[in-house]
Image (cartoon, rainbow, N blue to C red; front, side):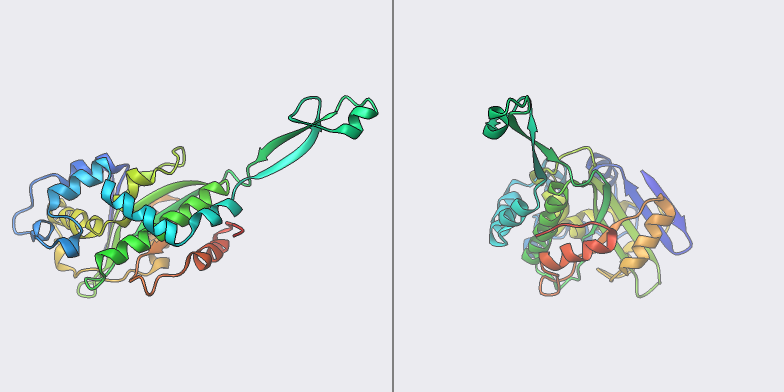
Length: 280
């Protein structure tokens, strides 16, 4: 775990889901709110904190089915097909298709072979900031999360490798403090396992229970639960904070209500600002 406290900035980075799970599964600090335990399935997306914790650790099967349905609606398979790694065909002494002209002239390179060419092996760091206001419906969070999962799928199938982080970064309009909870949910060495990470990306309880519980058990003397809910955080501010404290550049995607969220084509187009080119 990495903890950074500088001025009005507070950053808490967990190396993986297991580390985050152990941290939030502790006794609440005296005097802290108990928002993570409130009952409102429509708002939280789970019945209670214990259910949310189990889904975070072991995967959310019901949500995974919903994510698959949403991916079918945006026809992601068509986009993925266009973004696949390129195939290069060449003459070789062995292969799977005969090159008849070369065979007739006695050339040893009388077979056509094929190899995949990776378009890039660049490592990309992405932070999904699941920060939405209280008025955003739980189903909207699922749709937004599915959209970003689909873009990440496109990026990896285009040859890039992703370190993927999920969490909540928000700014308080009351105290001018900035708090950032981050957890790495996929390393660049792992394939994208949507069933395993969909809770941390598309379940509103990632913010509305896990982040709340983090506020309630946090060792810092400041009670972040009094800083307001879902306060917007500037994307460039988070980028500068992470680059300064972690020494890495990040792509930041801030969640909004679904009607404000960009379509996939526009999100992919914006990736060019980070030197990532995907043709769809």
